[in-house]
Amino acid sequence: AQSVTQPDIHITVSEGASLELRCNYSYGATPYLFWYVQSPGQGLQLLLKYFSGDTLVQGIKGFEAEFKRSQSSFNLRKPSVHWSDAAEYFCAVGPLMNRDDKIIFGKGTRLHILP
Amino acid sequence: NAGVTQTPKFQVLKTGQSMTLQCAQDMNHEYMSWYRQDPGMGLRLIHYSVGAGITDQGEVPNGYNVSRSTTEDFPLRLLSAAPSQTSVYFCASKYRGPNTEAFFGQGTRLTVV
Image (cartoon, rainbow over all chains, first blue to last red; front, side, top):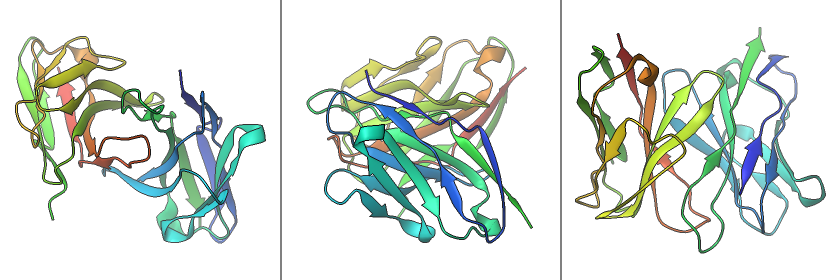
């Protein structure tokens, strides 16, 4: 069965610093990977997604993620964070082909920004 | 452009009461699902549906019922609320297929006392 691990529950970075949030997945085939962001009191919003092709994908709000098959990772990065990036971030893996449509989420990483 | 609409946004129940959380989407998505979000637990799938008349259990289905009589609506019923069901509930919808993104409602914060 597919699964997602986000090793860091909390991450704190200073405003203007670079950011990397880690995500590891377990999947039986070519993975379909997503990063979502949840601002306080809000629902989840898609940041970016990887299905195939270029392993470096660009998303909204200046985020990018790199798919590394050899490491089973899909880490999220941003060169310079802004205070408004403080939120919870979820990595997710899509369903296996020809199976159910369930998206499996990691437990999330809460990002704190220091002024 | 409503997307996924959940009602109510907040609810307080007494133990043993029943209620229905409403979810509606206007994107003609075949797939709809309910998650609960608890601190440190991420999002856990309660029930899901791949089309009208078809529902199935997710990871944590006990204590919840669903039905899908139309493409647009996917209500979640709590038959006899328990304090363990205190949580934030999210409805999500998407097109079928592995490479489709999910769209989420704003959530319902439920407290059972």
